[in-house]
Every structure is written in structure tokens, then in C-alpha cells.
Length: 277
Length: 277
Image 1 (cartoon, rainbow over the protein chains, first blue to last red):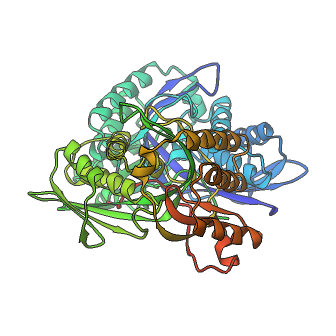
Image 2 (tube, chains in turn yellow, blue):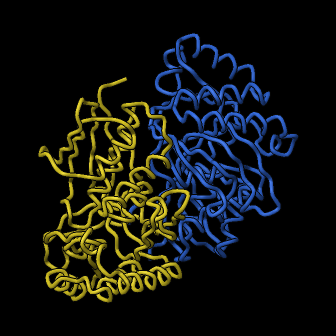
Image 3 (tube, one colour):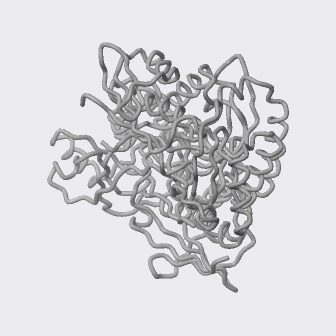
């Protein structure tokens, strides 16, 4: 057995969602749709006397990661390297929780299946209030449609069969925990309507259009995001906002065509993955 | 809209399985476990006045592919290039059916979700008698455990969280249709026992050991496969037989260490995927 193990977890941008809290964190979750990114988080776990969580070389408070280690009964140094900013709607905390579950299982021979590890990470995110749907999406890859809320065995998933290029600009963060702790009635109604429409026409164009409509109807658009989305539309493309961050995303070269200097990656075809053995 | 679309579908080796026929082809399927391969089949679909199916440049009879086109209401030239031999337990017919579904959906804007396309291909394979579990495994990627039989929405899946190197040698073919049409009582009892054991200990070693036990108990081992498996075990590794073909597979360098000259690839992390747009 080697001394450490490493997992890669794709980033995840939620385009729209509805919140479905529940006392059972495996049942709690969100419905909605999004895209997983070839930019993501690499998580290395090495058993240690005391647990420490590092992100890009700095110690961080990351309750879902600590929760995952505790569920698996392990103390370890968790070192994450992220291509994506934290707190800007890319699912970095979900990626860290899920990557920790996969890598810990490998290095400590915990003997769990993939669904069991996804469930452990999903429950940790729900308990921490840092996310409702990122973990199950990041475990699947592609462009996940979350038909039902919850962990594997509760939530059915589907997907849009396409793998486009994605451009994004992160202007800044929004607190997922604050928004999820507030009144989500309007947001959830807008998310349910968007999902219904997408399932009738599960295409790229419809996904971005419904995401944009959701961001507006849920009252989540910031001025900077709204202005960037309008610029992309004026240039003949379409764009929307990552839930939940002050981040704008477009497919293809939408942001470049509008004169921005975005980051660029692809929709990722695989979910969370152990580095090859 | 471009004139054609291309999908890649990983190969799939089933290690063990139980057969679960049903009058509804979406419900019919198999339980069991296997590994998807980075070697696979690339399928290009171009609409045409009459349907033609080509494999590696030669016209072939491939009823599941014709069935998929018919369900989607399209006539087309389907051109498949396979890194894997047909009829030797690599799921090439399933890959062709699934790749045809994905590529046809893209080029003809059929507007189906991934689960809908997987269901169409699964039903086509079941109706043709050419496979019971390859399509859902190939849609998922990784090392799929088929907990329930059937298409998405019927069959739950899980996975072994590992991505090892795979070596294989194909000695020749076996007829899946002949074996599935015969008495599958013994085979199914052995497959159910193997699945139960794997779910208690979902590891690579257990997967190969249970596959080997299944091949023996189900009476499917041929002399050539049995002798290769024994040689790998004598060299300190482990190996088993691909269901259903006269093919032996091992993880890591098992076959090389035993003096064979195998093909080598990896477990594939992604399922069937459209080429990037």
C-alpha cells in the first residue's frame, strides 16, 4: 500500500436549481442542471496523526472534508490543488469532499463502493450547508440533470448528450450557505420551471437560456454578471451565472466574442476519478 | 448543423453476470460487474437515403444498430472503427448501438437525453439477443457494478472506485446469443453469488477472483483460457475470462508477467461521449 492516494474531481457549475431540504442529509439535495468542467480539484490524502486540510498550499477551514474523514474513521493530511476559485460557484468544496472520500478509501482500503463514497461526501456537504447538488453532479461528469434530489439511491440523474467548450470569468464570491439558509421559495419555483422546460428540449441552447431566465427570476443576478451576460448576447452568443457565485459562463467562444478575456475549458466527460494504479 | 457526428464508446468486459430476461426489453438485463476499457469503438453517423452499417470499412449485419436508427426514425450511414475484435466479449455490438444512438441524436437534433439514448440502445441489444448489460455499463464508464438489471430508470448501478491498467488477449469468439438462448440457471446462480461477495468487498482483487470463480462454476472456461489464467496465477497475478468471448483479461501486468504478449489499455473513466463541439 502506498503512503498516499490522489483523486481528481471536475468543477461543477449549476445553471439552475430548486432546493429540497430534508432532515435526512442523504435525501436532501437539489434538482436542476449544470455542467462539469475539465478544470477541477486534485485531492491527495495521506494518513497522519491529526487531520489538516490544505488548499493550494494554505491551511483552510473545510467542514465537509473533516466530516468525510470522520465518517471514514481516518485522520489525514488532505492537500487540494484547485484550478478554480473557492466560493465562486464552481463546486470547489464539493470537489474537496468527494476527492477526500475517494482518495481516503484508496489509501486506507476502506472497501467502499463509488455510490457509498458519493453518499458520504453528499451528506457532508448538506450538513455543512455548502452545497446541495454539486457532489452527485461531480461524481457523474458530463452535463448532469438532477431529476430528483439526494444521494445515489435517492436521486435519479440524467444528462445532456453534448461536450461543448466552456468559457468563464469569476468576478467574486457569493455565500452559498447564506442564500440556502434564506427564503428559497421564489428560487425553487423558478428552478422547477426551468427543469421542466429543459426536459422537453434537453439541448445546449435551452440549458443556457433556462439558466439565464432562472438567474433573473430568482433575483440572483449581480450588476457585473448581468452586464457581462448582456454583452455576450449582443455579440450573438448566450451566457448565464454560476450558482452560487459572481461568475459568468458561456458555451463555445461566447465571452471571447464579446471582448472578454475568459478562462476556457471543456465539459468533462468523466466524474470523480482515482489516479490510475 | 454539420453533416455527420461522432461518438466514442468504451469497450466493456463483463467478469461475471446473472441473466434476467423480461418481456419488456427496458426491464430485461443482467446483474454483474465488469470493466470499461480505454480501447473502444468510434461511431460516425451521416444521414443518407438508405441505412448502411460499416465496421472497419466493411459492411456488416448489425441488427441492434438498425433497430436504434429505426427507433429514432432516421436512415443513415453508420461507420464504426473498433480497436477491439467483434464477438470476443468486448461489447462491440453494444458500443455500436450506443454510439449510433448518441451520434444520430446529435446530427439529427433528435432532442433526447442521455438516459433516453441509453434506453434505446439497451432495448435494441436485448431484442437482438446480442447482450444484456454492456450498454448500460458502457454508458457509465469506470468499473460498473450492475445492481439491478435493465435500462436507466430500472437498473441501479454502482462502481468499484479504481482505474487500473488492463491487459487482454482475444483467442476467439463465442456466440453470446447462443449462450443466452440456452439454459442459464447455473450461470445465473454463480453470478448472483459472485455479486453478493463483491458488494461486501468491492475491490480489484475480489472482482478478478469472483470473475474467475464464476467462469469455472458456470462451465464457460475454454481450454485455452483456462491455461492462460493458470499461467498468470503461477506468475503471481490473477486473471479471468471476458463474458462472452474466448478472451482472457488481467489487471496490471498480469499477462506480461506470465510471458504473454497482450494488448494493454486502462479502465476508462468516462462513459459513451460525443466528440467535443
